[in-house]
Image (cartoon, rainbow, N blue to C red; front, side):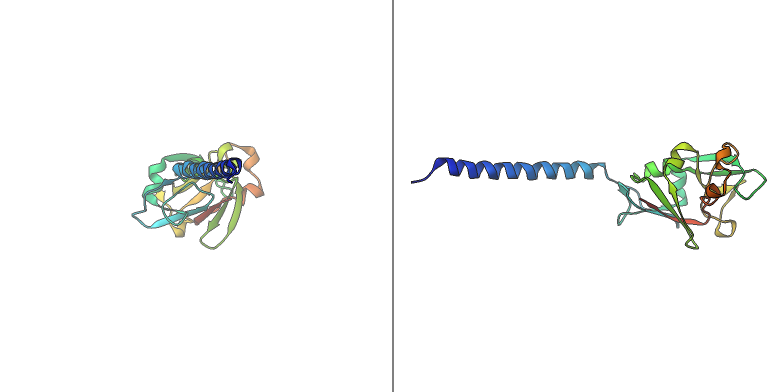
Length: 181
């Protein structure tokens, strides 16, 4: 004799399990839908960003050349650097725009220079201040010789609270990599 209740209970459990798998798969697809494949660089890569990103252009990281950075949008900032008494005009990408472009999801950014100098910077800095990833100084393109090709510049002249040793340490020059954490 076959018991109808046990058969239905098993089918019900199987159906519930399959529905759970379907819901999980849908959630994964929605998360993947927010991920975006960025274009590949066509020129020399001057900055690589990795870590908690929702957009990439290969192997979970974003490689950027100068033209790609310029397309994000260039901004100008007249300020002194931490160690200088003379103001300069710096041009580059606002860090908050760059982080939005790569879909950064973390709360801190580790900035790494060509000489492996590392500084962890709270992401809040980039929302609070117009920090730029500078690529030009006084109309001249930055090179490794002039502490480029990219470097972080804070608006020191506009905010007294930035004129500290700790803030000065966040001015990473010859910046080549960032890790979003």
